[in-house]
Structure formats: structure tokens, C-alpha cells
Image (cartoon, rainbow, N blue to C red; front, side, top):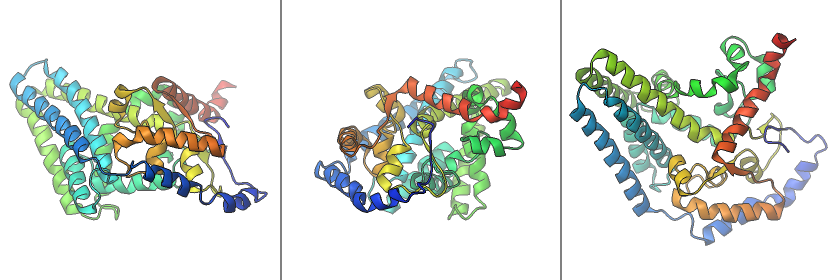
Length: 354
């Protein structure tokens, strides 16, 4: 099975019959993970990690105020993009209750980090991300592969109209340039979502979002000249978007897409559609543990520092069952994702190439 394969329904019904014999496959893996103590909360780890991110954010704010109307602020914009990326990863862990076991503190932390510090709606993103976890790479169910601007399958390419049809022709080349807009897109989508049922506290979330942008834009234009403020905004938001995309794109892009009607148990649905990224401590820190995407999808509330040990257990268990388990390097993961984007966009290029 290639990375960009499409998982379709088994018309013979053999898969359904086999399901009766493998229904406890995930239960067995879960038992092994629990026995290894990998689901325990790690308060010290998160205290240190979030404390370091808070210090980095305070350092960026202090440097911004100290430098004043200077071109040296571009270095602050670069550093702040990395800090915002880490804040995004912190909001992700809070949403999955990796930090706190109870809903209330997780939600309060998520609102403060996502809405107030990042300018992104926690409720909107939580709803979207929950649907992704339930049906990763499933056409029609996973919002992360809906054909908004990019197309993720040849079926989507053939049905594309308007902007997705235009962009899809060259989406592999345009992927990273488009990521520079992702930070702004998250904020725009957050404000738009305040009217939707996915945001249960629109007044609270809207107030926190407004507070974020009043401080953000107010600080930029109060301290910097208009030209420097706009350049700071472009560098900060552009690099922030690229950072987020570089963390999330390797996880599923280019992995098999599940067609409607396909029957897969939980274990196989999560493993077959996810990709792990190896690379050691530096990649772990850069991706916030999401490089262990298979284990994260199987055990969403597992604390980040436990994922490395869970990876060893899960890979061995998948080998026992004969389930393909994909793990590669960071550069190779992006290469696979870009190759997939180019491949699925081929139907849009075909008329022009004749």
C-alpha cells in the first residue's frame, strides 16, 4: 500500500467477518500502554514546559518595548512566530486534556492560550479537531481534507471549481507560500465561527479575541512606524503559519485516504492514516510531540513525554498484527506530502498539458 493510497470498501464482506476476530486488538494495546504507566499525568513536565514558553513570550514583549521603532524588531517578529507556534501546541495539549484530567481547567487554559494569546477560537478549533480525530483522512468527514483551497484526492480535483481548481493545478509548489497565510486564516475563521453552533460561548470567546487584537495591533502601531508595523505583521504571521503547517502537514498528508463506506476498526483507522516523524529531541521539541502522530491518535490524552515509549510498544504490536506502520524523517515526510499534492492535482493539469 502506497502512502497516497485510497482505502475503499471491501465488497466481499471479508473485512466485516475478520472484524469479529480483531475487535479486541485496540483493547490489548490499551492494556499494554496502561500497564506501562503511560497515561499518568505529568504535572512537572507541563509546569516546566509552559513556564519556559511564558518566559519566552515575556522576553519577546520586553525586547519589543525596549527596541522601540527599530528595524531590529524583525528579529523579535521571528522569535515571536516560534513562541506562537509553541502556544499553539500548548493549546492543543490542553484541548486533549493531556495537562489536566478535568474539563473545566482544560477549557479555561485553552481559552486563555488560544483566544487571548493566539487570537484563535478555542471552541471552533476544538470542534474541528475533534471531528478530525474521529475520522482522520476520511473524505467527507475529516474537515482537514475538505477542498477549501487545496484538493486532497483525485476525486476532489475532478470536482473542483473556482479557486481550488485554479490553485490545485500547482498546489505542491504553492503549499508553503500558502502556509504564510495560515495564521491569519485561523483568526479570520475564528471570528466567522462566532456565529456558528460550534462556539458555545460566543460572547466570551469574542471578547477574548477582541482583547488579543486590540493589544496586538495597538502595540504594533503605537511603538512602530506604519511601514515597520506592517512588515513586523507580515514576518510574524507568515512564519507562524509556516511553523504550524510544518508541524501538522507531516502527520496525515500523503497517507491513505478513506473513502465513504470503508469499514475499519479504530486501531487500523488511526494507524493506517497517520505518519510518525523521527528525529530525536530537537524534532520532539519543534513538533511538540505530534511527531508521534500514530500514538497521539490512538491515545489523545496521553501526555507528550510518554509518547516516545508508547511508540515502541505500538510499533511492535502493529508488527505482531501485520498492520503497516509508517515512520520516516522530517524532510522525507514533507517530500511525501508534496508528492501527494502534486499527484492528486494531476487531473487539473491534464487539459493544459495536452
